[in-house]
Each structure stands twice: as structure tokens, then as C-alpha cells.
Length: 135
Image 1 (cartoon, one colour):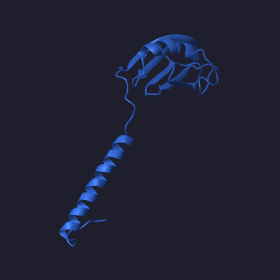
Image 2 (image 1 turned 90 degrees about the vertical axis):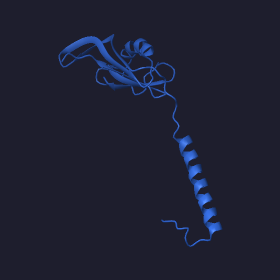
Image 3 (image 1 turned 180 degrees about the vertical axis):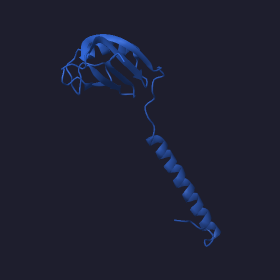
Image 4 (image 1 turned 180 degrees about the horizontal axis):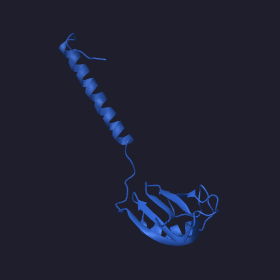
């Protein structure tokens, strides 16, 4: 649709221009408030190796896990909890977990334990772990 103010009286064109500007400003304010997301923590991403429940996969065995933490999740919390979580029974909703976290198994359903998994935080943080395989 194309607007043309040429055929309108000057006062009517001015009123339409004001109405359009008010509508655009209101839409921008609504869009700005609707797109607001929770502020993420300034915690830097980290990765580390955790020693936890024993695992075996295609002839490899170990107790080392690769852990990646990003999006504002705290590395110190992941260091404390990942070893515990690898000893839990595999489930979509692992319990217990740190406050504000949701954790689930991404593998291990056949072995019974949460050998690999992921946790997300209410502020967008992510913690993932999986067995540290040799190349």
C-alpha cells in the first residue's frame, strides 16, 4: 500500500503524518519491550576435564570427561556438579541439580548412567559433558 498526501488538504496530510509517526513510535516501543531478554552473566566460557564415573565406548575406557561451559553458566558450579551427574541414572530430567538448572542425559540410556548430558540455566547458560575419547 502506498500513501499519497498530494490529494489531501494540507491540514489533513499533517494529521495523517502525525498519526503515522505516533503509530511507528508505539510499535517500536512495544517491539523493544517484547524483545528484551534476561541479562546474561559476564562469566567467560570455559572448558575443562572432569574425572567422574567410569565409562566404556567402542573399546575405550576411562573416567575423564570433556566439559564445556558457556553462556554465563558458572565453571565452578559445573566442576562440582558434573562428576555427580555422571553417576545419576539417565533421564530427561536429572535430579538433583543446582538451583535454576535443568539437566538431561544426551546419551547413556543403554548403560543406565548419564555418561553424557547437558544442563541449561534459566539465564541461558549451557553446560555439556561427554566421555573424553582418545583420537
